[in-house]
Length: 113
View 1 (cartoon, rainbow, N blue to C red):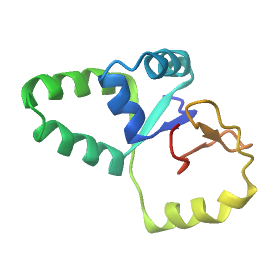
View 2 (view 1 turned 30 degrees about the horizontal axis):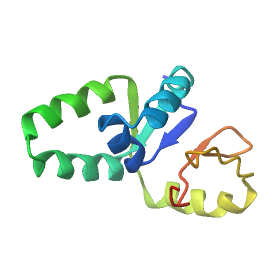
View 3 (view 1 turned 180 degrees about the vertical axis):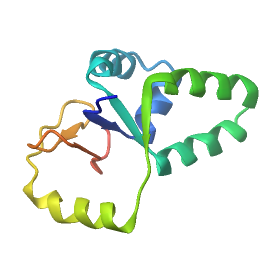
């Protein structure tokens, strides 16, 4: 699976809550390949287990994740990401998507508007 975009926890939550602009944007990006960090996945499962309807929330999350890569992390990968951060050109969309000029996905800490 090719992965071009690393999506943030908030994007997945908004998608699951049917926020139209997020649903539409992720639909556009999905063919290029979406990924989620293992840390974001843990946050999402915490939300699932403490939601009003954990069973329904879990089904919705797992359906969303069917073609989304889950990326693990190591000290080395985090360190490399930190070093390359300065070399990336930010191309933020209205959803604050950032892409390294090399095409590797990168998370963005910019808050949503």
